[in-house]
Length: 383
Image (cartoon, rainbow, N blue to C red):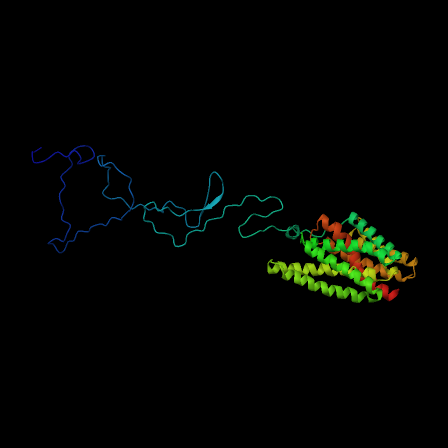
């Protein structure tokens, strides 16, 4: 080793003097037929961690292929699985972390995590609003019928109320007024609850007040002006229901729904006043026929057989009640018509998975309320 050469302990990684490095001219040579090819190394950009300047340098090969950051990633849109939770999740794009990797043209959409199990009776929670479905909607989705008959207990209450109407009619208008007011109150409350609107105190109070006004107007004018009293009260109460809904601050759809329910409830409550305007003998026959029809319908019989038995019971009760007064054989026609209307009222009260409250209000009142027009019209024609 000559004195001209100085020992460089950091020449290589082993503390020994490295080989002589000869400077090579890579420019254009005088030989125009030969041009050395300079191989371009692919650039790899990364952020190296902090290194001690006095540490031994790592071995660097002369050539290393470019690192493909996306070589070990799952394909676009692939779904990976968590080994612990066993839940699918979308494959995330490669983190940059300093690497210059091209961004995918269309990033895969993340798969929404499965929502926790919802409690019984409720749907899965969402951020778009309340998606709770009713029992009737669930029954239709499962192919089941949403119709539930009121049963024997509401039928027994209907029979008792029908007999009270028949007994009150024999006592006079004011004797009939007490069970009639009870019938109108049950009709107003039951109809709103049947339509899923509860609490609806204003609508119930307005409909019930309409029935009371119709009763008072009929008592003031007499039975001969019963149609005018009923229709006049009904027209005024439709206007009041419209004004009430116009003052509401609810959504337009809810106001329209409330308007239809309010008008229907007021109309049924006012129409029940027809018992007060009908002939007393027709009210007696109609009340007894409705009582027999609903009790026969509540018996555990097959569907078609139950309908036939109920109608026969109504007609038979009409014949029996007509034999006790001046109607005679005409009572069968009134009893049959009242029985048909009672079955329609029962069907309406049974629709859309009604609750116990609906059965004990609308299920009790609607058979008698629906029979009021038939009793009034046939009573005036036959009595």
